[in-house]
Length: 308
Length: 293
Image 1: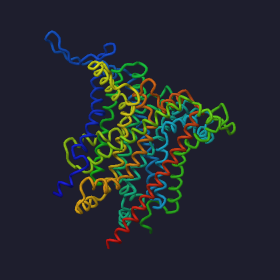
Image 2: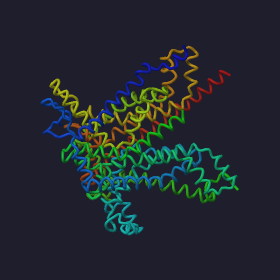
Image 3: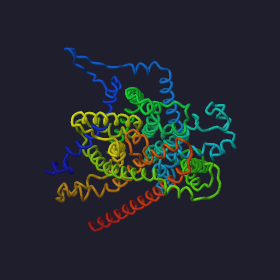
Image 4: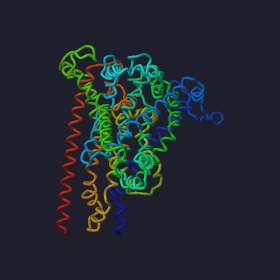
């Protein structure tokens, strides 16, 4: 009897699982299947042709692959996909390089200040992301605070030499401003899982390493870093995957020259009104992120099982 | 030798750590400070300081487009947050309490995927499905449903909100010791009583956090809204985005400052209330433990 009661929940098991499950199947999974279908459909003025037609006793399956052919053969699409992956990878590496030490020092700060530090990391996350990205337009634009500081420190010449900006003193609408915007936006997504991971670490392990003769650096590299692997992967995926398809940041900070696949999809849909092409671009994008996505889901699920 | 010392010498390590944290916070907060400062800028050039003014706030009060967008956004955000918390609580229960059911991997994958899925993909696919649905209903009943507008934007935001709400509430449910519910059942509480008197108060804080988080997420979303909005349904972020694309505009700074102040006050107030409730619960638990002993 008790066993039965224990499994009872409000509305019963069927509702608890069924309602969100059905909702997700209908509004998350089904739309992807429709995108897949439309990406291989022919447009007939405003309607899509049926994939399966039956005429004169002949069952015909029409799958139009020309969109995919176009994507794989057209140089611009290939370059844009490549550039999106490159910008997402650079952003992830920079977020990790800035965020790991940040999360590490946060987790080793006095226990009394840690909640306040955590709150300070979360607070920008609560304020509008759109407005914070917009703010960089002013900071990096002419006479902007950051632009002036970079010029005063002569960093703009270094950036020109690195090929990140076209001319000294011009920061906006360049790969540099795009990456700054993406690192800025996604940094908290890197810091939070890393902090959660590092704060839980058993510090006695470091003492043990030290007792066994490891230098602090060696202990860090051989104990701390491997133990925070789950946090590193979760944080990296939280940054990398959305960055690949980012639209708002390249639109506001990247200028017309920086190629990002999210903008291509947007233009195919809103400017060219080519829904099958936009769908094909989306399908190829899903293929690019499916491995990182599976990795993210696996680690997310494992983290859940471990805690339980 | 100090075994706890993580890296290098203690003093150097501490200074370096503090410096790194300070630089990080400067990076995170500089744009917010700039937004607020330039909202008071009396100059036609948006990045040149020309004295203090409240002109932009006065203009904001007459900005019909922005205010209409704000009203629509607030309504959508309210409904998104409420629905996200309800569905998110169910999904979190399903994931925590039922270790085994058919399609659990698919379910947990679908719950967390919108956290990272590029929004252009989610927006496009949901729109194409809703359009197909509208055409099908149009053909079948002569009445296309759903029309693009507030309802469709809400559906999109709910997808994102469900993911965040589930993660927040799930974390809390997992940390909850199962003995509490078991004890209530042993003492003869009916399942419904267990839920309303034990489980719900324990997860109420996380539900409040999830509500606030999904509310702000919805209030801020551009991409999903752009795909799913129809004629006459222009949310505030869409207004801001279309202006920001054209260049810098002090009107955006004024809106930004108002939002930042409201959110900062709301979040600080909410966390203060949560912390107070937590302290009170601790005291009650301690008192109960004393009474029991």
